[in-house]
Length: 406
Image 1 (cartoon, rainbow, N blue to C red):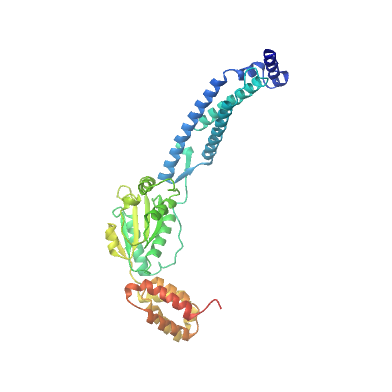
Image 2: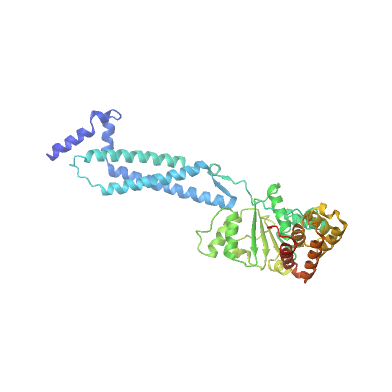
């Protein structure tokens, strides 16, 4: 009976219904050497996975070194590899679980179906291997964005500010200076100038591959600084467990780029290699610009050229203040007289001028101007603490001059 059952099973599998689409010899071929076919499928899958590793490594290198991202066709290929890998794993697992005896009525049908499935997967894997031999040009394309365009306040109309801008720009465009220090008291306009330069580098026809802007701030945090740089370069450091691994990955991303690294609001020096920032040289053409309040920070960072940002002249300060207040309100001679004194109290610091000028914008009440002048004079301390004065004046403006919420 067992033999008869097997014969019946064979006839069922090779019946006329099945022969409509396949010949008997073709169907019989599905039954032959299932283990050999499965072994071939595994070997092909190993070859495909090895190719996937090579493609992935190339893509990572192109992303880190040139800021490139995979093309859509490559992304699709990678997804297809993952899908067929899962399918082959499932086929292998099911084959181990199904140990049908040769005399079982469903044995030959199951074996034929399995053999056909394995053959199909072998063809699919072979096709993916052929399609996976990408050339470097077909792997990835370069991202258009070289950096972040930052919001700015127009100050370049002032001669003093423009002079500083030109000095910094000259250092960036030249080949002799790689590390540039921009220093001056808080509120004097260092960040504003550098933001203008950052935006000009992005829209100009310079040879820099990317412009990386990171605000360091007083509470220096190495991990935050590294993550900030990585984010600008469009990759993550989540797979790195130590500072050394993070610095190595950042270095790998930067050492073949011609970059400008802006470190804004630096309060203490640090070794570049600790972060992973390559040392700028005439050969690599890279630049590092830092803004700080203290000249000693520039020395600690071994800057080669330092640019001091100076306060605005009295005329420049008045023109900026008049622009923020609004020229219409200054038609009244008494208000204009007080306004000039208020502008002078701001000490030529752009941030102070802008802050106070905006708070007094379109203010027509002379008594409010007089109160503002008194408050400003009362809060003026050492010129070295001008950045604190700016915020004191802002508070004064909000509480003494007007209550816009009413």
